[in-house]
Length: 284
Length: 157
Image 1 (cartoon, chains in turn green, blue):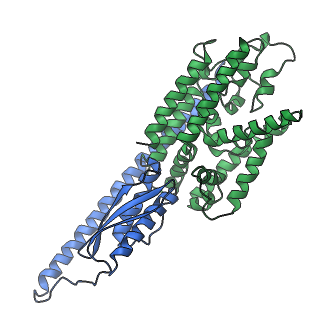
Image 2 (cartoon, chains in turn green, brown):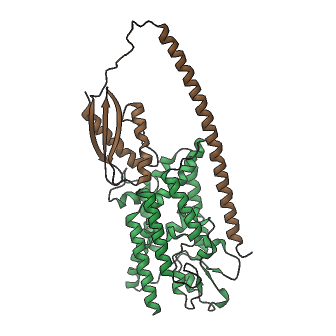
């Protein structure tokens, strides 16, 4: 019974991610362009116009405050791309009976600051009015062009090299880009998330020495304790729900309707909501 | 406090929102002031021109027609945007590029296309297709630009 429930949720997860991947692949660049726009306007001493990019960014921020980083977990095409890469390499690894190599937790804890550095770098260049230059280095741009099945403009460049390197890294470490490089993720990770939308566990009820949730977590997180104060590290959580599915004592809560409610209905509801929002932002 | 982290972040976020809104109001106020000053300038200039036109004799024909590079007519052009072809319609009237319409741009996402449309105003103002692309919507604006170039090629004398 438990195995079946997990499978259904996994299938639905993949379907949702695939839908966003094919329907709205440019969501992440649109939202981040909103950030760059704010920067460029302030650098020029101009006011802001509510253009499509700014609205996309503001709406995504508000939805993240309410629902957590559902965007990162399901909407972002680059994240889905990373997941797909890691799934392929896992399948190959399983065939050869090799164990997964994960980045040591200590390294991950330091590397995660990388995304803030990337964010600051990009904003710095935007302030200097050199947005075109920094966009020329962006692996996102390369990815967007690939999605339209065209070769990147300008042929082989540093951006293409970065894209290849990041893709290779994502084969070996899940969500390598998202955790250590993504400037949009950097912003999301600093946002307040409603307590009812974040994941937590009853630490006292855990099996001693279990750690299954942490092992399964793509962001290598120690899920926060619901009996203690909330943890700032939970900003790294993508709301994927893998921890909830894997806990042998069903001790991880959140992301469902109510405390122990169904995760699948909530997942579908969020997906529908985001899909409507994306349609309004991108296609109208 | 159980939700200490959430509260701190929420307060920070609201503070940033307030700061940005205050900035926006300040900028809007300055922009209005600038606009008022500019319009006053324009009015003053026009008054001077009127006076000079009155003074100078009516013998000289005012219409100095510069030989235009383009034939009058309506032309279409098509070029590659971000995700597909962009089709434009260029109208030349009295030797001047008077209108540029986007007939179709199905491969472009709305925010990018809207931002790229700014290039149209620029082209009409400068009366040439040779203008800078819009940063942040490079592919879409480049598509519009190239489509207009192709259309204007048919219009050349």
